[in-house]
Amino acid sequence: MTKLENLDNRAKYLPADLEEWLHSHARRTDSSPYEVIKAALEAYLDVSRTRA
Image (tube, rainbow, N blue to C red; front, side):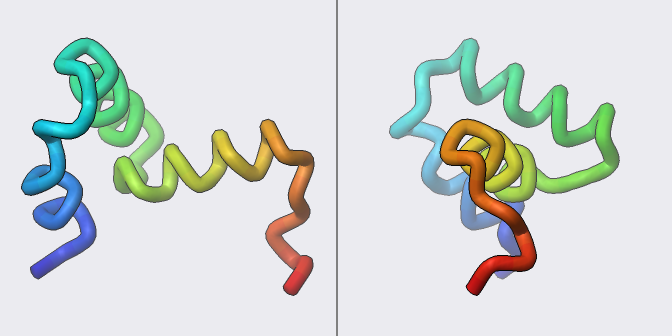
């Protein structure tokens, strides 16, 4: 199962408008919804992707 399929299976836990935005943004940025969430959390927490 791919990450996208896994997230799709969990869609019931996200409000419909958030899920729609997440998938739309992922398509626009040629990434996965997981990567969109990860980037948003890293930006919010000011975490560098190079930190361990």
